[in-house]
Length: 344
Image (tube, helix red, strand yellow):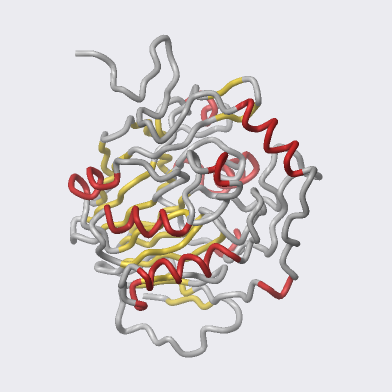
């Protein structure tokens, strides 16, 4: 039996679909040249991103509860019953290897780091700086130590080990692990990996599903272009109560299509996953990474959602700090203002 199609002969990984190509470097140079010759939409004003009000259960949620609080970009605090899970945790001011350069936050994290409850697990999609943040990883290790189990695709053990992480589970696509009563599954995505221009495709990237024993399930799409694999994911792993899908960083389309889906493709992927549950938007409105107006993705998402005949109640476009919950007994009044602690 040969190696899986997403494993490159001789080592490393690749996207096995015709919707992706291999070497991106010439395209990067072309993109940089074109950007110098055009006027991009301006950055949003500071008041363009109103704040939400986190509604977090401390220290843990009661059984049967599923919540998601948007910290920003691809970072969520998920409360799946009594387990607290972070996705792609980034609390730094910049998505960059440098403190004084690189994409800077439009608005602070929706949940201050010091307001986090006990964290049981972290899901990592891949190693780009807007998803794998060295200062945040070190801060989590200092605060929680070995209380956290880190779930990553293949190839990350050495990097995390050098930062003091001792509980790490590496998974290939379609492999499954458990944490208490939670099933964690690594799934395909169409993207790439690199933390320098000279080392690329050596670590795997992926999306994730979480399924609790009580049946509640979340799909975390990570960072991905649209690819012909969402139907298989939905058939094998769905249905989902909450689908967290990237909707930003998509222009210019000739370049970004293979790595970042646009809002219309996010709706398509949701429908191919089974078209059930709530679609939650992510990967927009926190860092400026590409050429589109940073405020455009949610507008286009809503239009695509309505055009697809979907219910407005099943679309969640969060403000930074907003919490979605399956709990019908939570009041929607008084959402403006600072964080609210909900003690079970």
